Image (cartoon, rainbow, N blue to C red; front, side, top):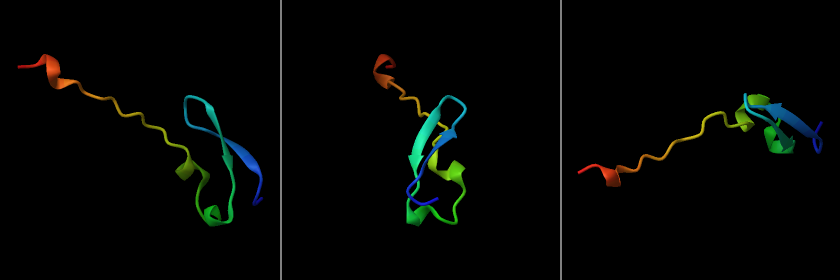
Length: 46
C-alpha cells in the first residue's frame, strides 16, 4: 500500500493522505487532525 492515496474521514470531510514508508505500523486516524483551535481575541476586554 506504500505510494497509494487513501481518503481519511475526520468528521468533516475526507482528506487525501499519501501513504509513505514511515507511516507503516501507525493507525490511519493519526494522520487526520480532527480539532480546529479557535483563536481568542482578548483585545476587546479591559
